Length: 316
Picture 1 (cartoon, rainbow, N blue to C red):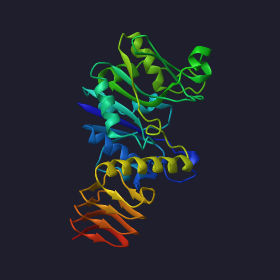
Picture 2 (tube, rainbow, N blue to C red):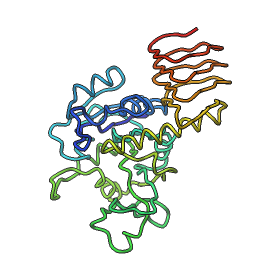
Picture 3 (cartoon, one colour):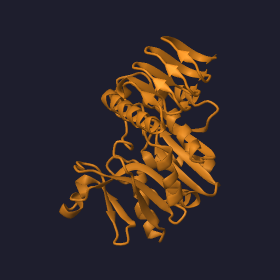
Picture 4 (tube, rainbow, N blue to C red):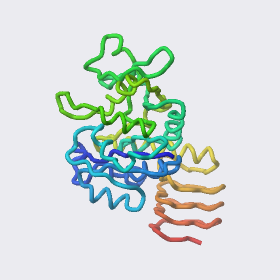
């Protein structure tokens, strides 16, 4: 069985907003909803979203799509995972995903699930030319993960490593909840850190591996409005490239905006300044003219859609 825990309890102070960070939008959809839908796309059968600040808003956003656990007070990432108690007896594998990792693709999440078919824990990593102050991934000769070292604690050799932790993980579910019982908060912040699970797993003789993400921008988090705009830009470029390779004709891909769950047929033409969002479905031989905004619209084949706003409707 495939399970998932989405960490969505934080406020996101640097967003300077009354809204919880995870309901800010990428591709015109709350980022936490994008993550939940991508988890389901790669086979997640049971998803628990850990909420905290503004939990009523997050729960309304995800109503009917997953289960919830409340983290109050918030005592670190490990403590957040502990709150998903309804998964404690489940078998199979469990992903732990940050609720602001809005651009992570279902294919990457699927690779994480598959990684714990032969290991007990997996860390999603990325290689950066400048790893700055990120935690470093220290591997054994066989490629397994020995430890995650915070930059401030790195030796000179460890600081020279370019592979860093993204904060996204996969676990054998039963071993995850067994190891959580051994997490300690004997640190300056008195918090429980999920990174400490690497050492606990290894002491038990359980295998910890890593999955290296292909694109560093895919696994970026969002902490402020500038990073939200960057995530939107990356996601839109990624989606447009995918559709152009599938035969969709763009007059200008820099000014066409397509959400992550839009579907399009063949011989589709998109003019500048078009917006296709939500669960919009575009049939074959459709032309979308400049200035059209479509959200949850089913466009029948052969249509020419002119300037206007169309939502929750059918065009035929």
